[in-house]
Length: 311
Image (cartoon, rainbow, N blue to C red):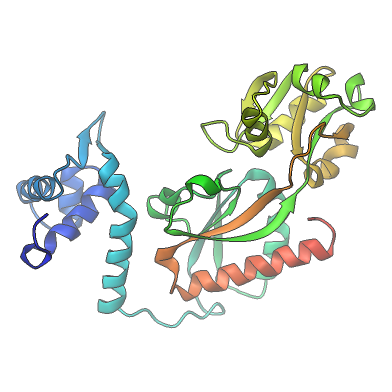
């Protein structure tokens, strides 16, 4: 690797634009240089890191593994430089017109949104935008999607060192089915749970959930016939079937049990409660607005616990 003192630091600015835009022309326009100049920078960066960084794909470049590794680190560097050169005004929630972005699962949004709205009523200009994501531990949520705070499950084994986590509450997981389904009228055996048709809620594309992970580690196979990333459609589907079962947080099914005539039974194995975390990126460590938002979410969660809407 070339000595740091010999590197043209403009290359880091160009690298940041290339990784965000994934397009040479767009990256050049973003930093006000010509396309040939940006192409030259890309060649220098490839030589510097001894990696292609951007790999040709359909319509735009794809990031190499090295580029994905560099992106969160580069984001922190660029943010630090921005703060040095353009110090931000002190954040005032009563006058700020900032829009905050929160990523969270659909069912957590269902519970949290009313409490959050109540907490926000005194702030006239504040805007909160939500995006549905089941897993909260993807660093790209914060880098590419500009999420300020994520709420949800995390995989502690693969958690990025750039993410900070705080446990908000724990969910007791149960099995549920329509009351028309005879299997839900009595405690489930492990055989019944594994062999009956199951709509599986998974937190990500790898079909990760804490119940599925528990079974996988014990080499038990559940009869999953349908996978969903949003749990609310699963509730509707189960409610209209007399053969299908599913697994979900108890507090959530309590909300819908009477309206959709759902029955519940404990899982036939000892699954620890699922922890739900608040996750932030290290790039927001000194962001007064994000610090304020975290406090607001904590207050809303506390209110829900006091109202017994959350465990």
